[in-house]
Length: 207
Image (cartoon, rainbow, N blue to C red):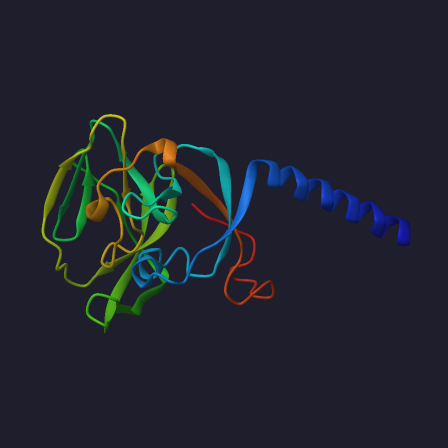
């Protein structure tokens, strides 16, 4: 039994070592309220995630990018478009090159309430599943959009990021498109704020 445990420990150490060669652990900071709400419902502040060391921003990827407006900080968003693409928001609905990505499927919990950092008021949000980049991921939308309608043609060599919380966003609608070489894919959540024993958030792949 001792020998088996020894070999298991060695195997786990090898796997962990290989993982750290290609990824780095990162704790999502809790000192930016707007960032904190913008990443819901996929992630939450103080989640510990693995971020790829390689740079890039492929369609549908959830990425961490250097903050264009604050040195030494990061923004988080989902890549929805690249140079030459057209992104439009009308009544809170996003289209990319005139195609709507929202699927007509509700999340397991269809509604949630979050405090809007801009107003300090609780707002009800609707959760739905969106198909993007070959996978389904949850997004939040407001019952009624208060954002202005926009239409943006993404500049060559850039990537357009959108928050999974479309209502309380911190994304390219706020800081414009980003350089893909400044982005890294978020691969896996190791655990959430509840720690290792929170099985719902432990070792979850983030799409």
